[in-house]
Image 1 (cartoon, rainbow, N blue to C red):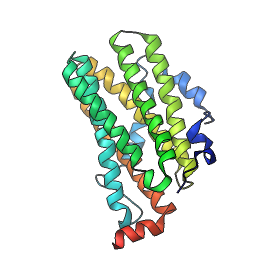
Image 2: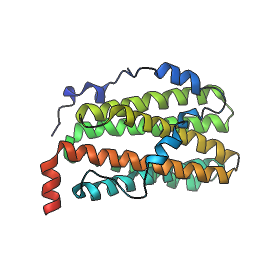
Image 3: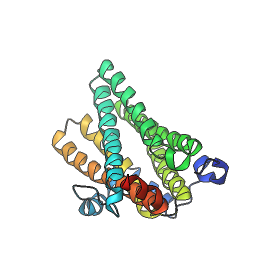
Image 4: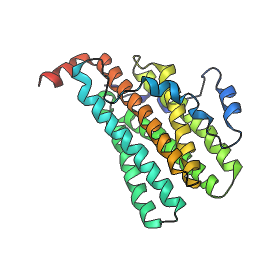
Length: 239
């Protein structure tokens, strides 16, 4: 187990070093800042209806991660819709579920890396959700400065999450995982814009794309864990 977070400074304090990120930021800030999801079609074409783990041993783990990430996008959408509809009771309930989901996603890697890495990962997830909420607030108040700040934060956070997980597990495909997280953040922003416009037909298509992306995030996670901890997965499968 990787209980000493000092061994993994990226999880503790990541400075984004991804080549070309400045260009990405410059290209997506104009208009509604939905360009983060520009590569949606490429990812969706590779997504399938059921998990694609490297072996049968990781199938249940991939399914578990898929369930966690589907819950994430469901509750973030629920928060957004409740805020837009000015439904405080629904917003409060959705935010509680969203917070519980963040804890659950972070806890899913604790058996492999220990509590310190889990807490670091949870902080990154919380920052992700907070940035989406800031974008929502900026959209509600027509504040371009809030939208811009939130978009920049989502971009940085995607790099931090990808780097953190790649640092503790060398089997994560860092560039591809980073690309998926960028698109995932873009989907949140696109969804908020579509919900605000009551364009539910377009938002339905965005939801399908979001689902395809988080399925790939889940499958990559399960695959990387199985490669790094083959004996543990074999023991679980045989048991």
